[in-house]
Length: 319
Ligand code: PMV
Image (cartoon, rainbow, N blue to C red; front, side, top):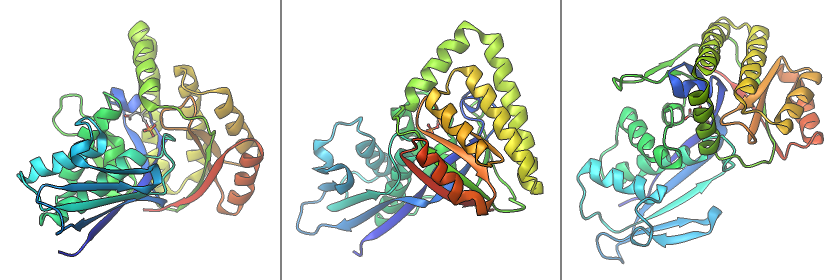
């Protein structure tokens, strides 16, 4: 049996994080410069049922049997076995590598899961359709934080810019790919401060429970901005998109998920000529993004690094 490999990109949330958990739309794009990869190879020297796991980036060398059931890797593999009705899989080794920075809001966990699910299901002789890959990945995402909106698994599985709206009735999320009239460039800057999404999401939930009216109003305003941003992208109005990103950032600040390090990088990006800038993902730390003219990307990147960003990535978004 030949080795089977699959890879999945990172992702960036362009607009709408947090509000998306409460049913508002959000826009996310794949980040193709960084990838997670899974390679599944037969191990005829081992008994059936044996599954070796090797993830050199995180120093993991183990077997499925030795991982706790709630380990995300183990859970992803078991979900595929269950989905395909495989009770005694052929012996195999799964090797996982990733260039996606971890705990930085760039979707590393979801990308690893998508790559495993795709490679493993193909290895077992049945390629799962995207919709199923996304649903299974969502189940694994729940281990990371209890109430994910579903946007990460969606954008990473489909590997296209998506306009995503979580269903409030559990009757299917609204997932739309859309036209990017003119490709645009974003610079991603990492504050270097790890910030687990689960904590930010939980704190927003507590704040919303304390002040439901204020927070619902904030979420709704974010939703309006996201819809306008989609139109701006579809019509190639890049400067309007920048302004909308700034407005979204204001509201994220009011939700309490920005931080002084993020605010500093945002201010530096804007002062260096970015059309707009905002945090991306859970906030508090992690990454910010700046929308820039392509010829300004290097300059903004350098300014961000001088201002303390531990890493920057320049990426072009196209349809
Ligand atoms: O930190 P990230 O990139 O995984 O993004 C979290 C986005 C939130 O809207 C805050 C949570 C979610 O599940 O959508």
